[in-house]
Amino acid sequence: MGVMPKQANRMINFLNHQTKEELAAMQIMNRTDAILTTKKVRTLRGLVQALEGKCQEMQKDIDNFRLKIATL
Image (cartoon, rainbow, N blue to C red; front, top):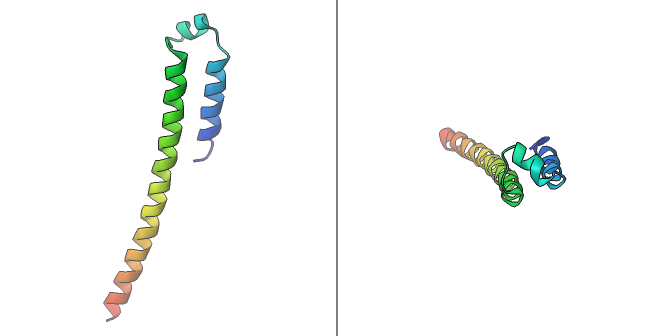
């Protein structure tokens, strides 16, 4: 995931330390929703990356199986 969790955590900390007026100037009307959305994106990104890794492992197994079948 690289630097994405760090960036998401910095974004959450940033949102937590802004005043309502500062958030309104950035067109963020609901601090809680913005933080929850950031956390959801971070979680979903981690899940997608885990799934991609599993798919790559499965593809390797499939390729190995095909090689074994081809030799028969």
